[in-house]
Amino acid sequence: MPRSHPPTLITLATRTLREECGVVRGRRILCAVSGGPDSMALLDVLARLAPKLGFSLVAHGVDHGLRREAAGELDLAERHADGLGVPFGRSVLAVAPGGNLQARARAARYAALEAAQRATRSELLATAHHADDRAETVLLRLLRGSGPSGLAVLPPRAGERIRPFLRAQKCDIVAHLARHGVPFAEDPSNRDRRHQRVRVREELLPLLRELSPGIVTHLNALADALGEGHAAWKAPVLDLGSVPLGRAQRRLIARAVSLRQRGARIPLPGGRVLGLDSVTLEPRLLAQGRKP
Image (cartoon, rainbow, N blue to C red; front, side, top):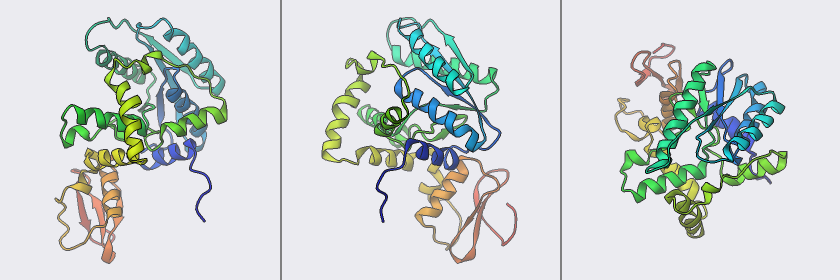
């Protein structure tokens, strides 16, 4: 029988952390928190999953110095982190108003988060990007004329940055907040239609949903297919002779390459096994029982 309920945000995040983010026991994750709904849900979910998956968690917020309300929003985040037993820190910046403000604020935020990551000796930095965010970004890139590489945005993992909510949609986050009574604040700039992203979110994406209810999933699949983490899946460069590769095998190969899993073993049709070269990480056929 089909499931009567869709998977919860916790279930979706667990799968992504294990299967696509490469989170293993003993790692420390720094969770970026703003006090908004997405990041508060991320803090709450990661705190619930830390004992189960065996990682440790710290949280950090950034006040750009642009809105008077930001300090209070971080106070809200800190109180919730304290209640969850998660250490919390913050950075206060002074981003000057002016042209290209969003891009400059984003760069300053990531610089502060990376500094906090080093200070707390966190191997990974988690952000609350979700499937709707990724769909919006693909559309923005299309509007700007980006090619295939420019559409390969926001993968589940890029270096030390992970996005545990990437297989969840905004509705999954809203449901988690309501179900678990997680407090959050709303940033009014997220509804300011002077920003192109807001117009894509509130005008273009709802229209596309009317035409195709699965548009968010479709746009995410496009970004997956074009992403660097799926290069082994999309590029016909594997020298495997006449061994046919199915879609599932190509996905496994791509994930092993993106997560640098040197010990990966991928079974192929005919009893053959594919591994990753221990130096180059290139996929290649292995003799039975042989290490790459």
